[in-house]
Length: 141
Length: 128
Image (cartoon, rainbow over all chains, first blue to last red):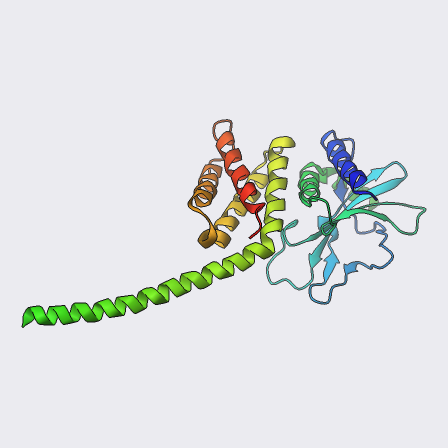
């Protein structure tokens, strides 16, 4: 994606989240997270491997797909992790029909101010409806 | 005789003080170099976090205790990590901001807190 489109996507995500047009929930354990072609549920780095943290990640349904805000935590950390500090963030979109998701932006994307992704994460944490997550979890149990 | 002894003691203490001062200056210099290396490595991350928090609180209207705590933590982080390489003006803004945040953000202290954050963002945007 072009940089201008990425910035527009994030800004739209932020404005839709503020307007409560997007309903963010904590990533359920049974949700099928599709990974990028070269990835599994961990980001491989010989020095500092990161693994997906579902309890700190969020998803929002959008039309026939989902927008995912994934948080990867360092696997070998001596101190407790408090996202988004020390974590790798990834904003993606996926649907049921495509084999792979599309990654819009991550913490390492060059040419884009990473404060946008952090701003979105803080916003989603505050706006996500934990009560609705509990209700969904109860209905699925 | 007595004054001679005092004089000799003062001479010896003066020499000892000189070497102690050298040791202290060397420690401060080593600490400053370490903080400079940390600054070069972590400057961008702290800048991003601070800017994101500023936008969350003032642009998004999320003036929650959690975000205020996160902002205060970042201020403390700046003070602890970069004290020896900060100018007096930077130290003033960092300490004033963390002091004002103790009482929470309200309409009275918000302009000063914004000024402090803006200054630190400007400082963090400078590469060493």
